[in-house]
Image: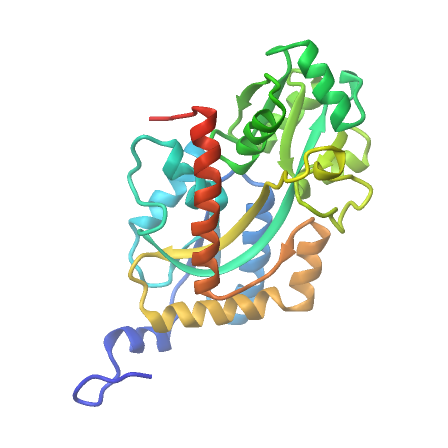
Length: 316
């Protein structure tokens, strides 16, 4: 632990040693019920039991996560305002939006990777397809007639569809929603043909037989639903598009606070009760170092920047 020239702890270190002394809020950039919301609430519940202060979850959806992320980017770097970071916010939106009120990398302090979940391609049961090849064939016979929904422009769910279009050459129309609460009922009713969703969100409806799952978007089958084949197994060998979530703080968070938050995150996600809740929801917890998270964001930014460019998608 470093000290000042006079042998006293720096102000930031004193603050980090005293933290937390007030309520912590975790900003979720999507509507309640989805994977990032589940993750935030499980983490908040564990922290609240162990830190002795309220830990509040705020849902601030809109603009592919940019509304909530902007709140955190402009907050004080004191450890009391945190963000559930997503692949959309930190690796896609910078290439997608022409103007942003914050920088998706420079305006945040990485704390830890939290968890990932495969996306799943689900279709309306009345569409009459039961495999990815059948869907691709149907789309080729009906160019621009089939539609795919997502939880918003620029999300990994939207980009999963764009990657499918890029790799197969099919023409399907994107229908963005504010969240799963709006998109899933439209899928069930047949207003949209298909939907990319987080597996953790769609799994109850899949198991209930209300929607048809065709493929998960990870390279390996999910332990939460091993009966669902991968996109790669069905002819798209390199197809991979997982949704991942991280814990982020505003830029310039003092290093001792970053270290403390990382340690608390690791302890929480390695706790048996927390792990079992997340795994049951289709989330794979995997806390890591800030440096590992930084490398992941850089790699994912390169990958999805290319997909965004090739799709021609831009937003103001």
